[in-house]
Amino acid sequence: MQSVQSSTTAAVTVAATVPLSIQNEILWIKQDALQVRNAVILLEQEKDSLRKAIRKLKLENGRLKTKVKTLNEKVAKISNEEMDDEEGKVAPEAELDFDELNRGDFYLLGGIHDPISLRFEAAIRDQNAVEHKSAERYYWYKMAECFGDEEAMKNILNAQNVQQAEEAMKNIKGFDVAEWDKVKLKHWEDGQRLKLEQVRWIENLLVLTKTTYLAIASEDKFFGTGWRKNRDEANKPIFWDGKNEGGKVMMHIRHELKAKHSWTGPQEEEESNTKLREMMRNVWRRIDPSKRAMFGGGRSAGVPSHGGGARGGRGGGNFHYRNH
Image 1 (cartoon, rainbow, N blue to C red):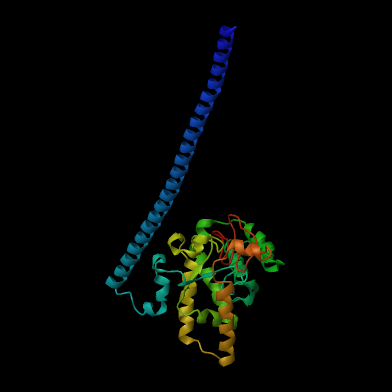
Image 2 (image 1 turned 135 degrees about the vertical axis):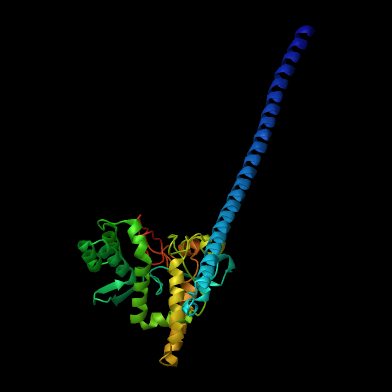
């Protein structure tokens, strides 16, 4: 009887020790898995940091190449005695490199609420007395004219809203990127000049920005900085990878206007300064998406309500090679 009890006790002991051993192995496996997971997380973080470092190096390399090219062009002009009085027509601030800008040194332009943006609705008349609802519509109209699409020209002019005009622009027949790239900056500038010549209060506003750097906050890498206002990178010049040609144009125009501008009286200047403060507070700055959602979920000032396709079209918002 005693022998049977001993055997039973041994069996119970073995049965009890086997599950404990398995539990220990499972615990070790879990600990190993946790260590592997932590290692993977660290690797991901290091990879992300490496990507950012590579991106910064690429940007710096690109800027250095541009600097060298600009210096070579200036040396060539000096050696050929072609400087003349050109320096007087160029805004010094437009020549600044992005890495020379600190937060607060620039205004982020663009969007339907920004009078200086191409998209802002302000009726203008061109040299042929044709009326356009905005500088952007003028730009699109000239695009259609460039490729001889009279139907698109008519549709852009008669569109009831910007969405219809943009759709007409996207359907321009015979559009050729390479050809348009040769002339697009001129038409962009012409549209802005017409607006400033014909809408006095917008000219006043631009003059009041003095010498502050003007950056077109847009994904378009030719006219803008490459970043929209709702992106954190928009507020960090080190991340800008666009040429900001649109911003440079506006700074050069401003430089010309300041030389001959005068106020009609103290009231005009006071009203313009009030408008300037409004723009600085609500429009010419980065738009925080979280705050935008907090205040009713609507779109913030300066951010277009929809995106564009390959032919896009924004006056400082999200636009592509056909825009501005």
